[in-house]
Length: 629
Ligand SMILES: Cc1cc2nc3c(=O)[nH]c(=O)nc-3n(C[C@H](O)[C@H](O)[C@H](O)COP(=O)(O)OP(=O)(O)OC[C@H]3O[C@@H](n4cnc5c(N)ncnc54)[C@H](O)[C@@H]3O)c2cc1C
Image (tube, rainbow, N blue to C red; front, side, top):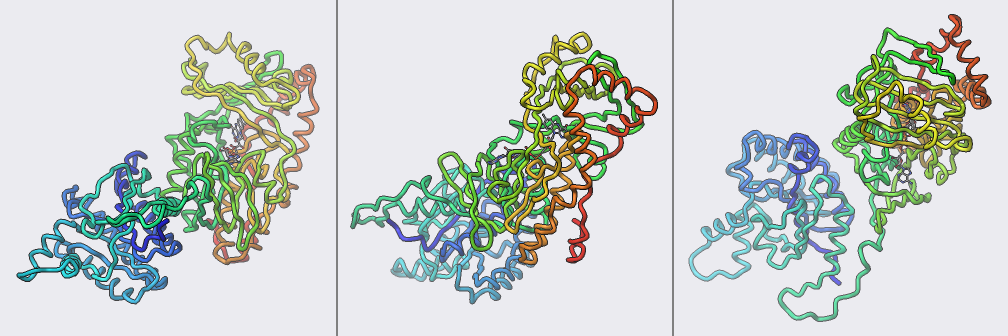
C-alpha cells in the first residue's frame, strides 16, 4: 500500500454547473467554490498533506465573459486578503503559480504581500494556480534554457521559475479532478508525469473532507511503480464503504424539515460550521404538512411570497349534520406554503452560507466524547461519523435524537393524512373548511383548504380511534356534491404524526437540544407547528451560537421547555376537552352554541386571533450580552 501522498493537486471543476443546476448565477458557484477551498485547506492540514496545489484560473479562462473573469479575479483578491492572515496564524505557506504579467497590479501586490508574509509557514505548502498553463510554462522554460545539453533536473528548475514556483516542490503524487470531466486541462503536465489520477463526480462546491479522505484511501490502494516492476504484492485494503469517514462540525442537525433547515441557515449565517443531515434524498418528497402559515408567522419571518399561495380570509366551520358557520376576516389570515419549494429554498440559503448538506443519511446513534458527541450517519452502505460540538434533534415527533440525548420525548400525538389535488374548480373565495365531526376526525378536524391553486383535503385524529384512509374517502364522498373532483389530479399524498401534548420540559442538555416537532413545539389546540418550528429554531440558533462563541456548553441551559409550560396550560386543557368529546350529537350542540353571537367571537378568536407559539424569553441571552439575531 502507498504511504500518504506528499503532494496533492486538485482541478477544482464544477462551480458554474453547480450554480446553474440550482438556478443561481455562476458567480454564486464561484463563491461556494471559495468556501470549499477553505474546507480543503483545513482538511489537508489535518490529513498531513505537505503540498496542496489548486487550479483556480487557467490561461484559457481569459476567454470567458469579461464580467465573469473580473468577478473571479476580484473573488481571488478578497480570498487572498481573508486567507493571508489565517494562513500566517496557522503556519501555512501560501504562494501563487502561473504568469503574472497579465494580472491587474492590485492583485499582483496582494499576491506578493501574502507570499512574503507566509513564507515561513511549515505545516502546509498551499499553491494556487492562476493564469496557469503547463504548456506555456514548458515553452517559456525552453526559451530560457542556455545552449547545450540540459539535465532533467536543470530543466525542472527552469520550468519552476517560468511559473513562479519553488523548484524544491516535489512532483505531484495524487491529482484529483472534481466535476464530471476527465481531462488534465493543461495542468502540471510535467510535474504529474507519475501522478495517480482520480476523477470524482462531485462538483467542487460540494467537495468535503470526506471526499478528500476517500481519495487518499483510493490512492493508498494503488500500486505505484514509477515504471518499475512491483516490489511486493499490493496490500489488501478494506473497502472504502466499510470504513467510517469522519468530519467535524460545531453543530450537527438531524432532520431537514422547516425547523432543521431554518436553524441550519441561521447558524451558518452566523459563521458556525454546520452539518445538516436527513434520511430523505429529495426534500420535495414525503412532505408531512399542509403548509398553512398563519398571519403572524408571515409577518414576523421573511418567507418568499412567491412560494406562498393566495391569501385566505374565510373559514367555514361545518357541524356533523352539515350546518355551516362562516367566519370572515378583514386581513389575509393564512397562506398555504409550497412546502417542497420552501424546503429547497431554505436549503440553498443554508448551503450558500456554508452549511454542509448530507442527504440520504439516517441518524443511527450518538455517543458522548471529549468536546461534544460522535454522531453516526448511515448513507446506504457507507457510514459517516461527525464529531460535533452540539447535536440538534429536528427529526420530528418520534425523535431518535431526543432519546439518544436522554431528553423528553412526545407522548401524546394525533395522526394527520391528506391528499393534494389540482384541477378542482374553486367554490368562491379562498377558504379553509373545518369539519368538526368525531366520526370523521376523532379529537381533531377534517379540513379542505381551497386557495384557488391547490385543494388540500385532510383528516386528523387519535390513531387508535380511526382509520385515516377510510376517513379521507368518507370526507371526499361527503363534499362531492359541492366540489367537482371529476377532472381532479391527485398530485401528492401527505401524512404524519403531530405531537399535541405541548412543548416538552427537558429540551436541552450540554450536548445539544431539540427543535420543532421533536421539542413538541406544536399548538395542542390547533395542531399548528410551522410557527413554533421557526420561532423556536431561531432562538435555538442564538443559544447555540452563544455556546460555541463562549466555548461553554452550560449556555444551553438557557434553552428550556419548562418556561413555556404555563403558557401552554389553557391550550392543553382545551385539548383534553376536545379529546373527551366523542359524541356527534354533543359536537352538533357545541357547534350550535358557537354560532350564537357571544361564542362566535370565541371561534373568530381561535382562527384569527394572531395566536402563535409563545415568543421565547431572551433575557438570559441578553444578560450574556447576546443581541437578538
Ligand atoms: C398532515 C399534517 C398537516 C399539518 N398541517 C399543518 C399546517 O397546515 N400548519 C401548521 O402550522 N402545522 C401543520 N402541521 C404540523 C407541522 O407540519 C409540523 O409541526 C412541522 O412541519 C414540524 O416541522 P419539523 O421540522 O419539526 O419536522 P418535520 O417536517 O417532520 O421534519 C423532520 C425531518 O427529520 C427527518 N428524520 C426523521 N428521523 C430521521 C433520522 N433518524 N435520520 C435522519 N433524518 C430523520 C425526516 O425525514 C424529516 O425530513 C401538520 C402536520 C401534519 C402531519
